[in-house]
Length: 361
Image 1 (cartoon, rainbow, N blue to C red):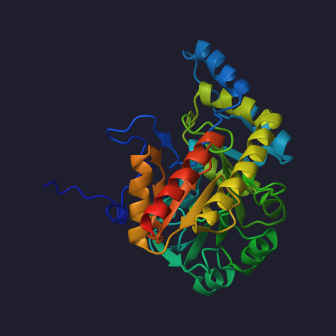
Image 2 (image 1 turned 90 degrees about the vertical axis):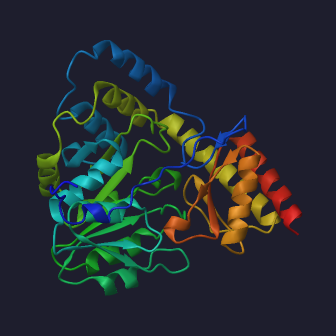
């Protein structure tokens, strides 16, 4: 056994487990476990990525100026306050690395994204889990958990895996109530699925303690390329850029992301279709006696009587070639997270859940 030891907190990290993609012995499998866009990326993004392959022998731009300019233009924000990363996960990592360490506390919520405690442990900080209220972020509970050791509060809004969200007034109340020296990080991976929601950009513009992160992996359909970005006050962006690797994004990533963010027509088409199918699927599940909270994302959290029923339904769906996500690791053992797929996929899920429920009665 080696006597070389890792930094404090590293061995406390439970390895992240992604959504299953295959079912042994079953063909015609539909993957609904990773909240991917069933319509794929914008054709403009695919073409931009293809063209970029002719420049693979060249180093990419270190400042991501073209992509940041496009993000600034489309979202009406200052591109100098934007940082880009390998998925929004890397931007979240920059934040934890830069602003938390041993002796500090990082707050996340009861059913929050599993990367948050991982990021806390990775920088030697202590993750602090705060209860939610009926699967919704509880601002009062977070504020009650804050103290002079609090450095970062991570919340996903809309949230994963619950699909719920709090409004901007509640986000502002949270930001206003944080201790001096603490940051509120609004993870907006699913922000585009909620019409009219800016992901918290207006709060960043008016406060010094709020950071917003976004991703190209969800509505933009570029999960396979891993691109994300953050928006924060300039002094914070200056700090984060000091820990960012200079060539963290490739030429292909930059080209595809810029084309994707500019194709607003395609983004709106995906949002509208997701809204339509999400509502249909929720109603179909309700008819089969499966409850769901109102979702503001591209997935639905289906609630069953108990963990045994959720496990049995998951097994039946797999036998029908439908892969969804068990979320016991998020403190929701009686639930299944189901990505909103295209219309045929949604109809297959509803039919299969109906068959399962009939067989269970």
